[in-house]
Image (cartoon, rainbow over all chains, first blue to last red):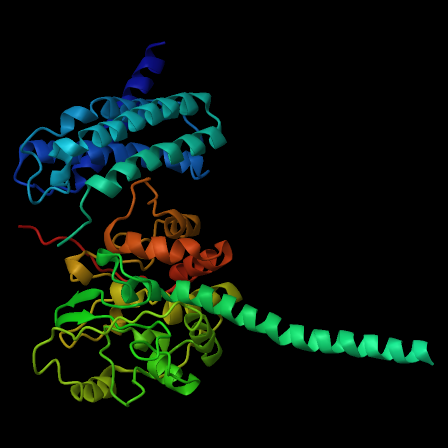
Length: 158
Length: 298
């Protein structure tokens, strides 16, 4: 009993450590703390998506730990609205100033809502353990990420 | 007797019918082939002024380079403002040798050093397709390049140093798939024009083929797409690579933006799955080059 708990705790810790390490591997500061935090959260999204993707592609066997990855995605998506405070759209951030333009408010919030819906579907799919379901849910989530990026994120520039 | 004659005339009629049909059917196929090759060659992207919503292939798009701003010309078959008066050999010289019908060299912002590798047959199929397009009476805009870079005759020197007038040849022992991918990449999709770093004279550095650069078009960062594990796409599967070209989605489900998103939209996403697989196989076969392409740390 004790051994099982210790193993689970270790796995959770290691999993967390790997995710955290992945997130801080690219440390570039925009000079704005809120923008930096947003970038870190987005990178966590990517790392968690990547972990689940490996299973969807058959590169890794399904593991119940993936439930944590999916829930992490849903948690960040749930909090997405708070990642864009006024003044955090600095020059070196990839967030476009259009985000804070009132005429785009509805569109921007719809994008977040779509991501939240997709992330919930992803949790359900991952918990089902079915490779095809996970693949479809990943695609939906990725599409939601992309839809917002297309309109509201700047391309990578020097 | 009558039966024999009518049988003969029916047969003759059938034969003539086929004779008329066959060339028409073949011509359509050449245009269709040309349409596909034009998509692969990415011509629409540079030769259309997307920011002003102007007519496709009518030119006028500003291409900002370290040497100045170049404006793409009108390549619709308009006889006055486009290529409507060009014959086959003039078209081949322009596309594959980078020389205009009046004998002037083009600036290599037009990627003729890549297009030179395509077959004459493919080039003429592209011409056949372009000649079916609606004519645009839009005049070419002059380039905004200062002397001495604007002196076209200097291009003869550039070409002597850097232009390899060679047809495509696959690597020895390349599979048919890899050879096809190489032809697409080197002669048509011309990936190297953006993904290979250039020297101070604007020529691609062959030692760093597809190894990426921070000095991309429009100041964009262009990634290393050699199969290097740390700095390139070595850890991507061929399916990942083909998937990106088809949908713009990265292996972590993020999406590409900027110029590459455009390339995917108007060119790569429209290639066949087989061709995308061939490109992916080719990209896995080229030398892995360690080259970190990153924003300089402030």
